[in-house]
Length: 183
Picture 1 (tube, rainbow, N blue to C red):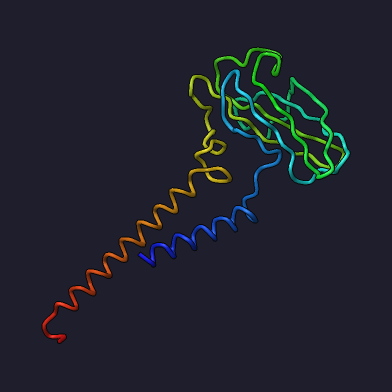
Picture 2 (picture 1 turned 45 degrees about the horizontal axis):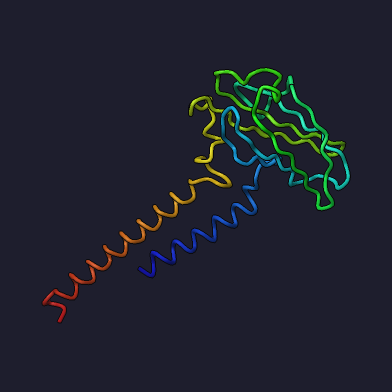
């Protein structure tokens, strides 16, 4: 049991270090990452923004390849960067956002933030009746990265592996203790 607990703790420490240094949230951060017509999400600029500068926030709709989407953008809004180098803006998915009804096709609501010193782009997964666009698993909450359920599955697998190894060793030790030639 001690081995299983130790392995789980080591995994938790390693995964938190990996998230902190190797898998930072994509900027601008979008929370939540998935929704449909009428849903709301928050866009937050976290990394590389200069306090006091104006960020031009643009929003468009793509059916594929949202991180390389170059337009057209139907919505534009200026946002000022705060003293701590961050900014945020709430978005409601509706007809006015995209200049037309979002429609019946799942896709990506692409958010591009651009200032004189920095540009960043991320995407909100737009679902229709629970149906996600192709390739959405890279963005969906069940994928890998911040806020994913993938880490919990790995921790559970490590715990099960360690428990199985401990039970096997326990059986070997018990069998060895029952061996009459060893007394």
